[in-house]
Image 1 (tube, rainbow, N blue to C red):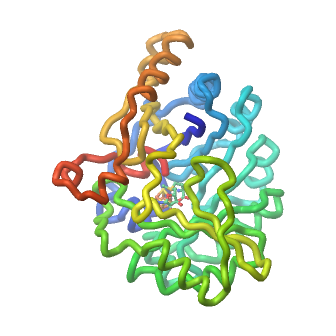
Image 2: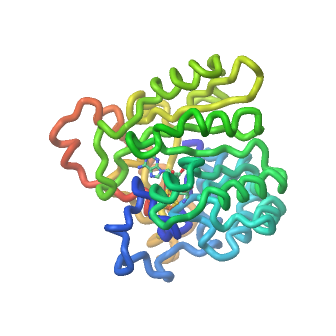
Length: 329
Ligand code: SAM
Ligand code: SF4
């Protein structure tokens, strides 16, 4: 266990078709009540215990992490924890003003990933489900760069027929910009996004298309367990990455635990259930008891969903899974 993804909220101001489709996450959708979310202090306490058990990297995510007020205050609580070498955040960029980016940097955030699925407004607006314009996400990327986050990573989820025509335009835009574009295979997270294998654009196809325009070569992984396959442009225009979790599952090397916004520990993005650490915290458990719980859950983990998916057993197809916006992408 080396990385911990912390979902700070299940709420989001976007309705991406592959994550929180607006038909299913409408005005009547019941989000978690405020009181059931972990407080920043509770998150920081758990992060300290996870760090004592070997976690060195934290990522804040959601839902949309920037809808949680004063998220920089959480970053400031996490930054001094002994053993934590890296704190990052994944955001849709919609609320990343220049001020917010500076505050996050000052609080100790080290890296930012911004999601952007197309440069073409009509395509992006349809995919984010709320008509949000591309320009504002590009501004957010500029704000992150100006605040000193470099390289900013850009996540593009590919869905066949929706935005796969935009692969080359995205590659061209971010080549030489200092940002690292990562193409992500559409995953069957949760049960509401209508996932079908035929909608997945295999990463091998993406790399072949980009390589045909701008020749690429492989870059070795930064560290064991890195999920992105890295490539660099032979002409020196920087790097791109692919996250091939469907066509090339990496369960065997996974070192990642996940904490939901209400403090449930999950050992897999495709888990059907988890263990509530919040109930332990609020029940007055001391650090040792909480650490024993975490270590026990991690020690018993046998998750390899993405590998089993490839085998397509009926048991796997019928499995109940947690939504991405809840568990934290
Ligand atoms: N709201 C933030 C954002 O969109 O960046 C953070 C949370 S979001 C769940 C984290 C990442 O997961 C985003 O880059 C998003 O595009 C990606 N994602 C969401 N649903 C996905 C799916 N079904 N398959 C692959 N990636 C997905
Ligand atoms: Fe919101 Fe991120 Fe999910 Fe899109 S991918 S709906 S921005 S949580």
